[in-house]
Amino acid sequence: MSAADWEATAYLRRRHGQVLAEASRRSRAARQVRGRVFGALAALGMAASLFPLLDIVELVAVHGARALSAAVFTQVTNGVSGGLQNAILGTVFLVALGLAVAAPIGVGAGVYVAEWSDARTAAALNYLTDVLVGVPSIVVGYFGFIVFVGDFGWGFSWLAGSLALAVIMLPYIVRATELALSKVPLDLREGSLALGVTRARTVHAVSLPFALPGILTGVLLAMGIGIGETAPLLYTASWSNYNPSLALTHSPVGYLTYVVWTFIQEPFSTAHSLAYAAALLLMAGVLAINLVARQWLGRRGEHAA
Figure 1 (cartoon, rainbow, N blue to C red):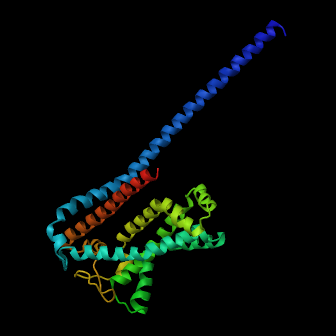
Figure 2 (tube, rainbow, N blue to C red):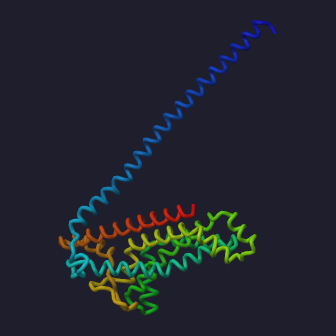
Figure 3 (spheres, one colour):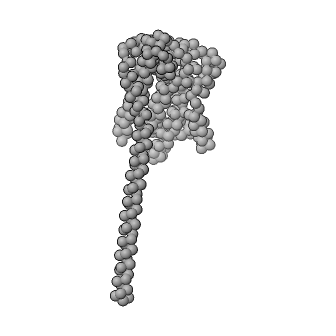
């Protein structure tokens, strides 16, 4: 090859490298521009979603803090005045009993789907769980009114209301349990089985402890959902100005969401104050549940690590 050919080849190589470098630079610049545009759009979307949320939180916090007093916690509701002691206790009773029913059933069903069911059965149960999640809460309340209040003859009661909440909370616990168990490393299962441990013992001693944080997250999520429900309780628990009794049936009970939904529509300032106070208590309760859950689950994660 002559010197001229070498020079031409070297020039073409340099030129080719320059073209590639220029194309790479333009590609990086275009990616940076697209990244900045999409980042700005994402920030704008975040601001658009946070603004109404923060506005609601600020409205409830300011008006609710003004409405809080000792009487809110020590007096029962008297018409559209008084306190919220009956509604606070009623909310605790309803959610606690509903969770006591939904948690064992939901965890058991989730364990069965994740560990023992075949593919067809698991798909069918997951489909039914998803359908139950999508059922409007007012439909669940109407079902509770027909079955618990009417057919079973329990009347308006905190047992009927708790079971209606249990129906709403159940699918969240089932799916959370199944997802948590599906993330248990296969090595742990195989190691336990290789040592001669039975499958049931492996689930109890290996899989469940590993999946416990995820399961509890689902339980707490279900609890937060149950605290904020109104429609199913209107048909099953009704309302009472008195503190809940120990009678499970024929005993209407008050709850905080009823105060928020009903009292804010009344033309009285005392009713509005109780509605804001109830909304603040609900918001603070859900926030406290999430904070405690994160702290506790974080410590369990550190111990597991």
